[in-house]
Image (cartoon, rainbow, N blue to C red; front, side):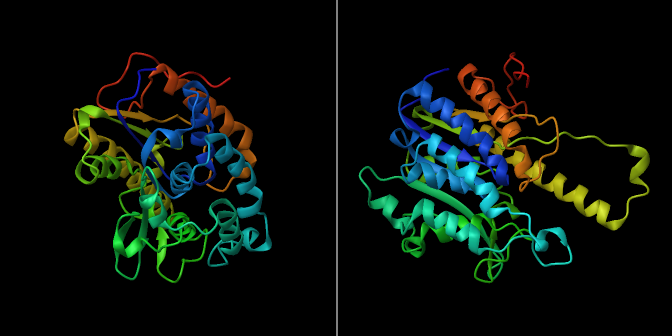
Length: 312
């Protein structure tokens, strides 16, 4: 693994329970570094499940502790209940209270502004979408309007996926609903224009939570019903936006040491499917090896020669 530069930033995509992939990979990275990531990363950006990890690192949790959190997250936040079984005859799959309790146990009473007055200060970028104002919000510890925001509020809002959870406070939903399911460009922008880090002195580690396998039968497209198109187009918009963020970083921050990691899933894994925990750990091991071997996502313009390690 190539050594990091003077300044280190981390950005993590959304993906529900698949965040365990990243937590596992970061555990492997921490073991190799011999120190926790919160000791070296002064900027952490996250969307949805990525917000949990970004906030956790900033709050001083180790990657191993985050991995343990994800093991408990599944059964507590995504239980099999009557509400889930009869969905979509209900407005959402899961109540918000268990998730709020989970986050409260992890982050306590910490507020966003606490990160900025810490020594040394840490910058955090958490994305939400505000239905009331019809725009993305970028919750940061140095912004006056967010200084007193509870960390739990910011993270829960970023994770409030429509149809999975009720809208938070009647207005806040998942930050990935807009263009920022992958917050890597936000992190690059924050590092350069807000923190004034020189790209030549900065390493940005960007983590996806698994690219689902894709297949398409052209003969079936002419027979799609409206609901078939809804599911298909949502996936197209989401993945296109994720890759676009990578291309933006490469285009506008050429001198940045940008390392994008992503694994190709061999099966579709829904964001709330806790039955794949062991499989997600396997994918995390793959991503961990990719980090150590400097193997980057093939969506990037410049690809290394090494292939992705195989899942066994």
